Length: 80
Image (cartoon, rainbow, N blue to C red; front, top):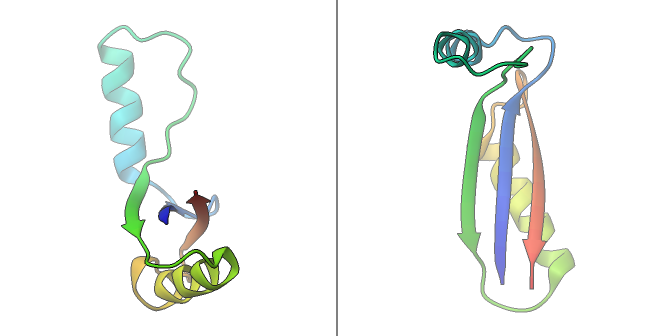
């Protein structure tokens, strides 16, 4: 089973890298960009076919290692 864990800063946390990307896009002439928030993506393969167990394992991994839950949010997507 394949999964993807998306990790982003909470909206209340300043994202200097996102601001830098926003400025760079404007300087490249990309119109209409009003805000950029950057994050991390983890592609993970898990043995077995129990989606509920896989989601629980990945949430624990995100809570313990992949995300700093004080300043970051995450979401888990599992694909068949």
